[in-house]
Structure formats: structure tokens, C-alpha cells
Amino acid sequence: MSASAQMTRVRAIQWARQSIDRLDARLLLQFASECSANALIADPDVVLEEAQWTRFQSLVQRRAGGEPLAYLVGEAGFYGALLAVTPDVLVPRPETEELVDWALDVLRDQPAPTIADLGTGSGAIALTLARARPDARVMAVDVSSAALSVAQLNQQRLGCANVALIHASWYDGWQAADGLDLIISNPPYIPADDPHLSGDGVRFEPRLALTDEADGLDAYRAIAAGAVARLKPGGWLLVEHGHDQGAAVASLWLQAGLVDVRGRLDLSGNPRMTGGQKPARSA
Ligand SMILES: C[S@@+](CC[C@H](N)C(=O)[O-])C[C@H]1O[C@@H](n2cnc3c(N)ncnc32)[C@H](O)[C@@H]1O
View 1: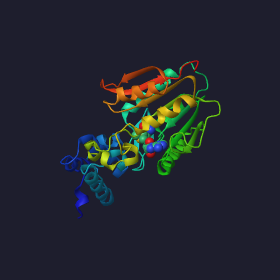
View 2: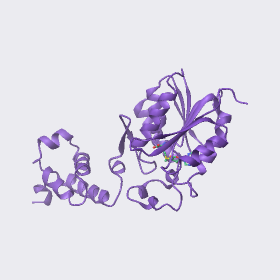
View 3: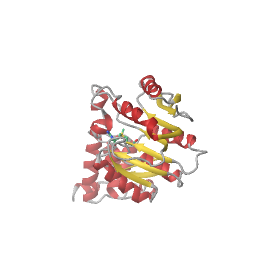
View 4: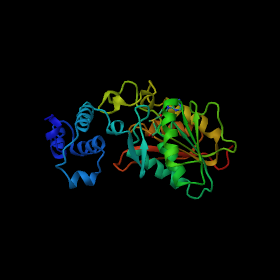
């Protein structure tokens, strides 16, 4: 009898719990054995097939080594949708959902808004806004063609016809004919010498998504410098940033000529977002 002949679902979870947490163990077993959460609870004594047990062991070892769960199962939840993710894109974070909430607030009274998501990665922000606002036109920009392929897959899955994927560095080589109502971005902002870059999970994510290889503010400088020329009067620039970067980002927004510059706290109370508006009548 092979080892797997004895390996029930419940025993497999117990084995995995020696190295990873319970929720991850359950999700990986569901993925490896193609069973639902309900089936796992209802039938814990089902014996795994040999291939399922082998696959599960490999996934658990990779998770124990720090690989993000989302890369192992190939998807992540964001704002109520399941997005495909691969190691070519950042795993979308819950804090970024709060940036989307802010964007939906500022666009509430704006019919048919034109939006640019700079550094779209998996398309998390662009596609969520496009779904919430079917009247919007959304430009999803990324310098990484590998990331754009993932965003394209998500666009197809979610059926967002109102999103254009653009391969570019920030504003280079494209424009929105009548200007933008919103520029939104969660750019790479970790300073090159920050030890978090080699931390659990993060070290498996694309370096281009994480750091500017400088002080962490280069993307904000580039995004701020081009914003006023591209925003419509009254249009908004909203970004996510590190908890200690709010003052520096606000100062860049003011230098760029934006007004009503303000920070916003995330649900944990950390200052993680800054926004500003192009004056309604620019000089
Ligand atoms: C922190 S990730 C954010 C991904 C996604 N928006 C999210 O919130 O999950 C930053 C993204 O910016 C992209 N990026 C880095 N440098 C860029 C540049 N110069 N122009 C456009 N995109 C860039 C990276 O490829 C990456 O996809």
C-alpha cells in the first residue's frame, strides 16, 4: 500500500499544520485535491489519491518556504472578485481596496469619468473601477509586459470592455484626448535598502513592483510631475504609499500645483494614501 492510501484529508491537514497555518493548509488541500471547502468539512476521512498527496506536499513545502499563497493557487481575492495572479505581478493587498473606495468617492458625481491606473500590475485597481463604473473609460498602464499579460487575462475573465491596457512607463507615449478625471496609482515605493524587500512573501514578488531602486519616492516624483498637464480642472491624483511617506508625497503634490492635498488613513489607522486635486481653474 502506498503512503497516500492511508492519507485522509484530516490527516493531511494535521501533517501540514506542523509547518504552515490552518487556513493556508485547508486552502492548499482544496486546491491540490480539487475539493470544495464544504466537502473538506463534510468528508474529512476521504483518502487522497497518490497524485493529490504528492501535489499537496509540494505546495505545503513551498508555502513553508515563504511563497505567497496566491502564487501557489494562482489567484487572489480583490474587492469581491477573484483575480489571476502569477509571480509577474504584485499580490493585490486589502489596503489597496481602500484606495479604490476613495477613488469611487471622488468620482461619485462625475459622469463617464476618464481614469488612468499607473502601474496596474494584475489590473486590480483598473478592473475594479471599471466594474464599479461601467460608464468610465479606464487606461491601465504598466511598464512590465509580463504584468500586462496577467491584467489582460483578468480583463477577459471579468469582461471589462471599458479598459485599455497600455505598455508604457508612466505617461510616456500615450494620452487621453480630453484629459483625465482621475490618476490613481499604487507604485513601487519601498526604498532599495529596506530590509522588507527580502522579507517573507515579498521576496517572491517582482522587484519592479516593489522598489524604485532608490529612496522609494521616484515614482511619486514622476507621477506628480506629469499630473497637472494631464488632469482635467478639478481632476484628482490619488496614490497609495508607505506609512512614513505621507509628508514627502504631500509635498510633491503641492510642488506640482495640486490643491486640497490630504492624506487618508487605512483601516489599521496608518497614513497610507495621499490625494490632491488640480485647481478647478488652473492659472
Ligand atoms: C506595487 S505594484 C502595484 C500593482 C497593482 N496596481 C496593485 O495595486 O496591486 C506597482 C506596479 O508598477 C509597475 N511599474 C513599475 N515601474 C513602472 C513604470 N516606470 N511605469 C509604469 N509602471 C511601472 C510594476 O510593474 C508594478 O506592476
